Length: 194
View 1 (spheres, rainbow, N blue to C red):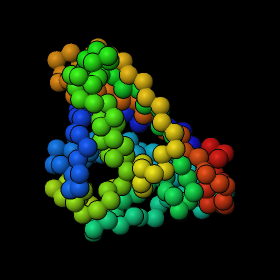
View 2: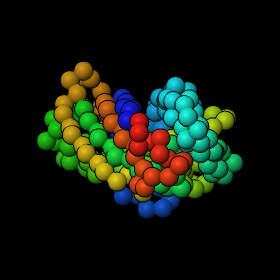
View 3: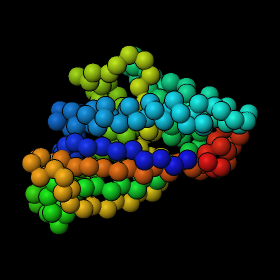
View 4: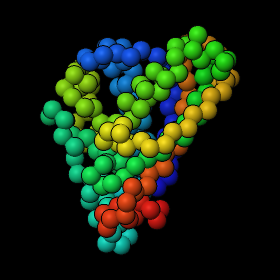
């Protein structure tokens, strides 16, 4: 299964925050989650593997990925789940509001910016990560249950020429997602054929 998510907004470098996470990092994570959740909702409404259009295996896959993940009174959905033996690779193009060679010195370190993004793509882990978040009722979509399912990663950067008046933290992201089984089962086989 392949698709692309996009994000246009601030992606700050918030450092290697120890538990509990620093407030600014949580705010950034939730801003990204909220920006991407509508795209995942659309995917869930239209993609045949998630809707369950097709054969028995496709319907079984749709049923398995539609099971809610409960976190402290909130329900989340995640496509990539270790219980389904699924993994994902991310191919990210990051357009930055500064010269790419200034990634570390002017806008913060790149690895912490990417860690913030990956944290935003997963289901919150604990109560602390839900503190202060405005979560709409119902099932909240995320890409993955846990970031441990990311088995491949590629990042390219370039200059974002369309937003010179934005902050140095502002980025445009194109996040190519490829989801495949780690081993084939009757519940995940549809992902290998899509």
